[in-house]
Amino acid sequence: MSNIHAAFNLNFANTGTRAFSMAIDITVPGAGITAIFGPSGSGKTTLLRCIAGLYRATGTVNVNGTVWQDEGVFIPTHRRPLGYVFQDANLFSHLNVRGNLAYASKRAQSPVTASRHARILEVLGIENLLDQPATSLSGGEQQRVAIARALLINPELLLMDEPLASLDIARRQEILPYLEAMHAEFNLPVLYVSHAVDEVSRLADHVVVLEAGRVTAEGEVGELLAHLNTPLQSADDAGVIVNARITERDEKWHLIRAEFAGGAIWLTDNGEAVGTDVRIRIMARDVSLAASEHADTSILNRLPARVSGIREDPHGPTCLVQLAIGNEHLLARVTRRSVAHLNLEVGATVWVQVKSAAVAH
Image (cartoon, rainbow, N blue to C red):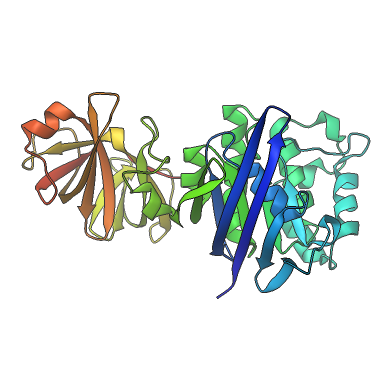
């Protein structure tokens, strides 16, 4: 199976203010999106720059069987078949969009076919921007052009360093569907740096969690989001993703039914076709618990579950409860008083009430 292996040891003074050391050894899938997640200063960008060869760190880089760096090899950055998308688009201001893209095509390791070129423009929705000056574009448009430029290099690996960080919420929501389309369309491994749980939940297949230059957790995104003890489970962002399939549409009430391993829930109908596989985001704050099923409630989604873990918030009155439903796990954030009132403990059976859930798109 193809994979990406990167291992580095690095010590340096960070902008003259403090020393920073990194000791990382990771092997991640050679396809799909791997999110590099962690707080500011954890080493996310440093790791990407090492993989790109922008930092001459001691270590190894092997991308799907090709050695980019080891004890006897160091391929310089300009010869590594990679695309790099930064926080800022960094377009050439004196060129229009067409000129920016032409520059990338000239740098391609192998020629980009006309059909692939056209498909990249279509997936990123920039066909009508080609003759516009780079300086006239909105932030979201600039970043879409920057992503297209990186893809036109025909890379074997795409590095994306918080590409949405400089955008406001509206522009972020505008560009996320294009990133999802890119993920679905192009068979290209992506390392995606982010400190935003919502981006990771929506885009990633695999996650590496960094803290102070060390890997603290790694695994499939759904598995890590369901854990009780990772930085992905902050007070506001705790939640899981569930892979499901749309099996029914209720046109009268504008709802769709999504089935998953262990049950089914009703969602607002946003046009997903019956038979479509979807990724559902369920926040812990939108899940309540009951000792028995209650039909006299406005909550439609009620599922039997087993308590598989409980973690108390050390700085507040709440607990995070992990719940097993078939092969899937949900999380519920409830008060400690509720835990005591319901006599919750690992192994207990409860009824889960999902107040709100949404397809992650």
